[in-house]
Image 1 (cartoon, rainbow, N blue to C red):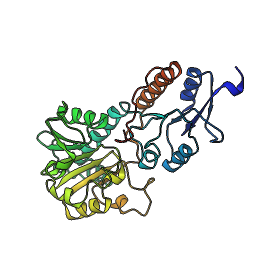
Image 2 (cartoon, helix red, strand yellow; image 1 turned 90 degrees about the vertical axis):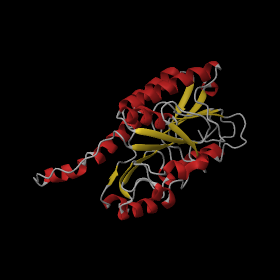
Image 3 (cartoon, rainbow, N blue to C red; image 1 turned 60 degrees about the vertical axis):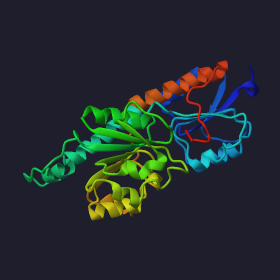
Image 4 (tube, helix red, strand yellow; image 1 turned 45 degrees about the vertical axis):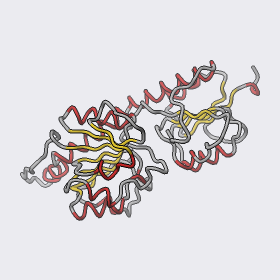
Length: 316
């Protein structure tokens, strides 16, 4: 085989050295490049990437046959390039992030209910000041998005005795929740929730989904967790709800602008817990993502159907 016969594969967001070794071993006839987009590529493997950069790459690669992203959802900038495009199969990382994200949601929710930030503040100043905490049992939680993230979160919350309902685009029951609502039943879904968890991908249908009207329907003093995508929640509406007490607090792992600017009021708003888009950052998630990539590489090379094929109309 000559160099000209090799399959050219573009990587975005350089995988860890061990992952890169596994990819190279699984695809020995590939020229795996992470530092150039010049020339034609047959496939692209995305660990992390600016949406605009990836969209520009797709525009310049009309013959690309396979695009895999370790994320569960695709940004609108990329999805717009897929409409009507033939010959390109897109796969995602659905099923690899749910356990880590669900634990993150539970950790932040427990931190809020058990008043851990206040206790840590008291410890720093040697104050013996026990707060009144809350239990998860008996709370009503609503989860926006019942994919891998949402279902895993529902399982953990249910184990604590929380009543869990879900909002989803499709029809039918989901075993992990006690009731499901369609997207056109959003207001009814939000009514009286003690906890609202956003775990949906960003699409044109979810952008700005949670605003002042929806937050006003939650139980007064509710808590919001966003581990989906930042633009799904109106950040100004969220700040207003926290300042008025409609929300007792919020835990945010994703934001409309990332990294979150130092000037953002979210940093200093009492009751708001900030994490830097790291809910799924675990060694176990990395391993599951790599296992999926390697399995799909084997399938692609042998002409078998790929796992996690994305529907461009839905965005996931």
